[in-house]
Length: 117
Image 1: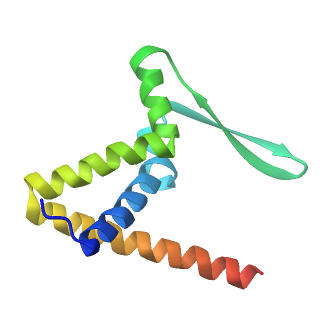
Image 2: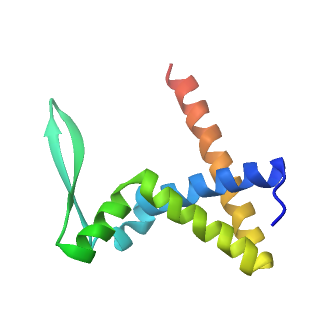
């Protein structure tokens, strides 16, 4: 695999977006639900979400993996690189799609912060 600055930036943005999708987004909550319980407690009038890892052994391991952005980020990156190496057409499309979505997410966060200031 020949890695250019362009492809590296795309992989970084794609990995960021896929990791956020796996660890945080509501749309993938069904994947996390068997392994993680979300407990919402109101503190000083503000709802705060705590994560409780379910089970033991493999179930607990997967729960810890799915609750950790750093851990999941490594495996999401491995998946993306593997898809580009072994299935270039699909992998490159997936990386491009996720990179565009990741970049849009970063821009949205910056714009939201500027508007809220």
